Amino acid sequence: MSKKPIKPTIDKQINQIVAVVELLHRWHTVPWDIKKIWIMSAMNWLEDLRKLCDAEYVLEEMKEDACDL
Image (cartoon, rainbow, N blue to C red; front, side, top):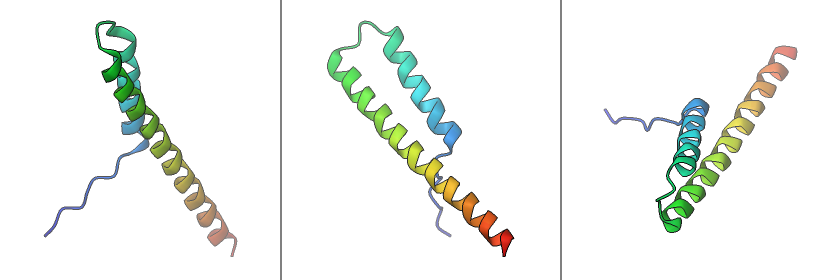
């Protein structure tokens, strides 16, 4: 039996983004190159989060439409 990959949840992604932002705020000794990588990661997570929210919105709309039939 193969394991299915665990899909990230909205809460998990929000927590990851918050953690990155907190680290960037606290660590003044982190080189800019590393901070840039973290910023890019946070931006990617935000994009993934937007897509996930859009998909959930569409799913809810489809459920409402199905109930109206």
